[in-house]
Image (cartoon, rainbow, N blue to C red; front, side):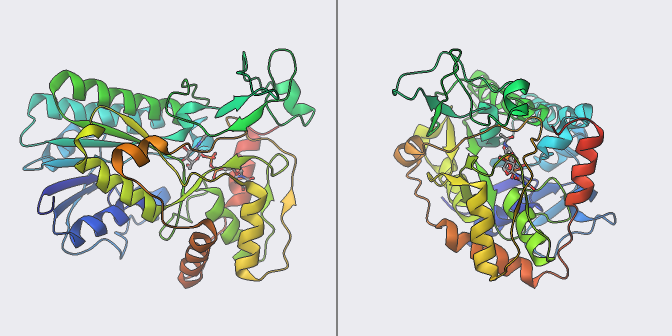
Length: 375
Ligand code: UD1
């Protein structure tokens, strides 16, 4: 249904801005609430050129109850995408992450509970990180008793999780029924956001949906932000003639989903009545190793620069997690359209058009190491 008044929190950001474009294209009236966080948008907090003139832009913060209330005026659909997104950073900026993500969502819900206005739908950006480790089976196909990845195992380069009897576990697609086990403050705040929205949505009859995004990549992915995703980090390393630095052994598996497919899921989730009250995985449904990411990008760029496998471990990292997207397929009619190789080409094409892709990987690594957050 087009022609609605929609609020996108975080609408100047990577995912939010693509959603804003899609909403405007189908005739919605869009308002953006975004604080233009300096870590993403630069110290001068410049509004990115991609924020369209025909969207209403409010520079404001989800940490401010007044900003949140003001942004909700006359709105029918709310997409809550504003969040702090660095997993590693969340392990030393604990209060900040809880403030922006958990308390920011609390302010949004408080405003809706105090005065719902015309809001008919609330969609929140959740994350695969809330699972902790993905699903695994024992080598014989049975269910494991536990998924163990202890400091001792990691020190001995035993990267794959083990069961209590020491059996090495085999990764399997992760479905929404996997028990949640957040392993970082970021993940914990994402679990909070999801739970708070679905709980209050049910209690007050506000139709709500949570989307558990897997590893999103694509044009407009923040490069100046050292806590951005691995595909953007590796691309900017390669464009700067630097080798990508691979943690562990590079065989860890993820599910890389194009921002365009994520927008498809966001649009569908607001339409489908059967989606209300539920959380959905949004991925590509394909498992890709970190080593494959480096290889594919090097191939796209036609570079001879070889990735370096560091054997280091980032505290809070999980080993494998890739999506079972059956539920989103069935209920939302979601179908990923962008193949991994094609999407990596688009990412690199966009990066090449940028002025000078910066590379903050060394600073980031040093920050984590100084705090004992790498092994
Ligand atoms: C995390 C979150 C996810 C979030 C995403 C982007 C978890 C489980 N998931 O994903 O919800 O959306 O961050 O904020 O916490 N890697 C390297 N070299 C690098 C950088 C990363 O080898 O220079 C490896 C990591 O060790 C990891 C993989 O690449 O194994 C993916 O890392 P990253 O892109 O940061 O995302 P996740 O940690 O999977």
